[in-house]
Image (tube, rainbow, N blue to C red; front, side, top):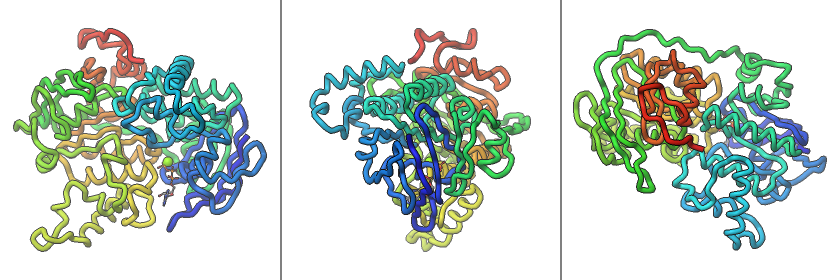
Length: 510
Ligand SMILES: Nc1ncnc2c1ncn2[C@@H]1O[C@H](COP(=O)(O)OP(=O)(O)OP(=O)(O)O)[C@@H](O)[C@H]1O
Ligand SMILES: [Mg+2]
């Protein structure tokens, strides 16, 4: 159904794809694995007509095609879900889905909405066609992207890290959906860093390294260890040791915090929380259950409507992000593209964002370029950011490499309390291993970490205490020892509460 033959794509200073080859048949789920910056997204963008290859050919049903626009790719039956969301936030679901479609379907919104509802029901996506995208949790936005492809009847579906923001149950059901779509004769290409997903869903897996497709194998003939080794070029295991630490003084205490949501209701309904020295407190939850609003209120990015935030005994409920930063509270947001970085600025300038005043000379009048450069260089080296040079614009970094820049920036600030949201989303297994060790090092220095993550393995490996959030409330506190995947996953979906620790929710979230 699809063949990519010897695709080469060069960017200034980078060979993103180097004679890459890929063959995918109808009915096949094909996984693409590779480290951050290996060239996966670039290859997919070529397939989607967003980039033209410098060399090589794209063949569909055996015929060479010049895909010079996304419109052409769609006409050839190719649909793509990008690593970062491409939805227009102020528009509704139905407007987003029909956006860019030819013909007069755009004028028949009701009909489109009906079809969307039907598709959503059929595939169990739980989407209201009239909802405004900006009001939807990221997890639901992801499903809107899938729906968009189904609406276009794509025959070749390309998904770039589609499960990064889903709970294990949601991810499993997505993989299920993908399998079903393959059974209907579609070809599915899934880029993922999750080896268990590759093992579970893929008929074949192609491994990319430095722009080249180094191997194409049947995962049934392999195992996670071998895949990891092929990808990184050395053995990796995601096991960490969390040395025992007696937690010290209380750094953060949050009492009865309330935050209003975008649509009027409460996003955070009065939560209590403490973080002490030498402690990682994990907040597990499906995105959209108030955790973002909670950390935004704690970090001063959003106003709370009730309750208090104390830092080292001082009331900082309404402190600004800058005041927080001066007290040592720093934040890594979940959205690295639009909140965590400035795309047009280089890595060097991004590396000092939020502390520009530390990088001035001449009584604060001039920027100290030399220090900025040195700092960025240190960050790039320590966090192994793959880039041609440190002035490279952040917006052109691969997803994982950008995340490393942001995590590195905040860790290098030597914070007293590090608030991180989805810190390893999109990172390859080698980078995750490293980032985890860095977070544990922060803890080891007697600092506090508030870790918000949808990644159960991450929460269980790092957190000393785990709070599960659902619809703006904590459903109870767990230790990593009693938090198995099943229980955590169910609690995150609002379907189980630890006995005696929280309210039973009325109905599961879909
Ligand atoms: N528009 C661009 N201009 C310049 N360089 C680019 C551009 N897009 C990608 N690159 C570079 O090409 C290389 C491959 O990037 P790509 O996004 O394909 O990696 P990836 O395998 O998807 O990584 P990740 O797992 O981090 O998402 C990177 O070094 C990246 O910086
Ligand atoms: Mg990518």
